[in-house]
Length: 327
Image 1 (cartoon, rainbow, N blue to C red):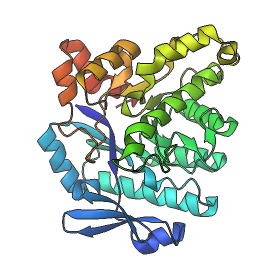
Image 2 (cartoon, one colour):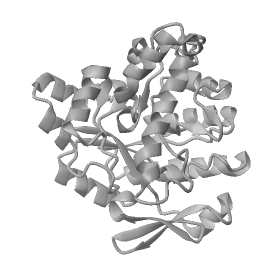
Image 3 (cartoon, rainbow, N blue to C red):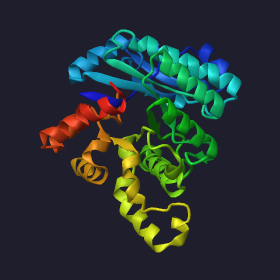
Image 4 (cartoon, rainbow, N blue to C red):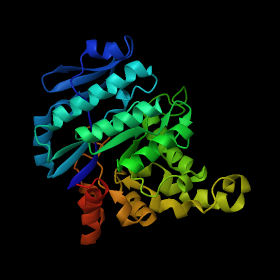
């Protein structure tokens, strides 16, 4: 099995985080095998040692039967709001620490870089530097402030990655509507996060960006593409009925499904069947969102339970990822 979507958070000290942001820099507080991601002085998320310890992660891979796992930053590390003179060294530090964590078993632990997307030139340089250093791709957030992926600068970055053959994983973050109505029960993660991913996909489709981006771009959206597959019929119907939906998008939205990939982190057999039927078996890759509680607890279990066809199961569990990331 190849798991393309898992997270890490290296041992970043309070002092190192303060160089990024003295009040809200993210860092890791640990006690034995338990830890707490901190944002400044505020607890953000309880975690355990598979998030930062390469040896523990490797032991967990053995327990799960995972051959290769691709790790990427926990999104709180993105630092897109920071000045570039702080954000670039921060991204470089995270990327170097990621390689350090993977060094215990570089054939099994692979890493995706993070880049300072608020500065497109710096992001392009860091993506190439990280690729040359050993990263197999880049993880980006689905937006930078008010700029979605169809922003001209972000399209420049996507085109750079296409030209350099750098695969991309798009992860939702900084969720919309996280105000008074998202009052409890992790509602931003359950409602806004899937919507953020659908927004990212539709921003590329309806803006006509996919018409301008190279077809060689390798881009995958986390969490099964969020709410996209379930609502694609609504989008197609809107495109057919309203000229304001068609004004920048020359083709039916569902005709762009061959331009991107999704992972399998949807947690329900019916949802996975719909995802495969919508995207095609060649466009879905195993993703666990480990090692967080909202991730798949038995990695690959949903695919094995849901997909009866052995060839399709092999595609989802490994073959698609091997081709996408050139493993």
